[in-house]
Image (cartoon, rainbow, N blue to C red):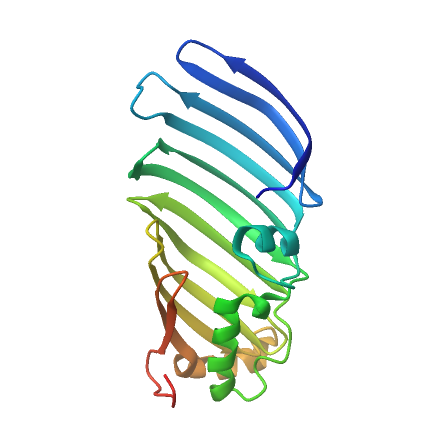
Length: 219
């Protein structure tokens, strides 16, 4: 379910293609702009290309509609493009960037579990709210590759890179940097980053966090 209203667009339907241009819409209390081109020459599959631009989208109803999450606050802004062939995951390419501000990111189950794990290394880690996150990604070979993920809370900055496969498999490395926002103190403590390095594997439905270097009871 995608909550769109006040939709405006120019639509052109030809014998072998469909073009949607200048699409604008209110989208979960924010705004969306998009361009879509569909080539229907081949009856067995379609070639699709699109761009999308999101601004100040309310993250709470969006994640509730898509994933059933409750009370995940934040404002989502981002842009992306992609092109490929329907039914052929390996044929898709694309790129984009996302930013979440004023968030409650620990309420996302996968991140909530992470905060509990890091809380065993850094007492009280999960208490400060994770308000900000950003990520850039590229799409190719049936997966999205993310190499510049950052999540900020008052105490710890998380950095991450890895791959999300279109069959929902996860393969990420996550590092926790203590007090990185305080330049001198953060620089002094950054060698401890390896203590809080974790691996994320599994799938979106059944994920698993593992420490890379330091064994923790229960993991």
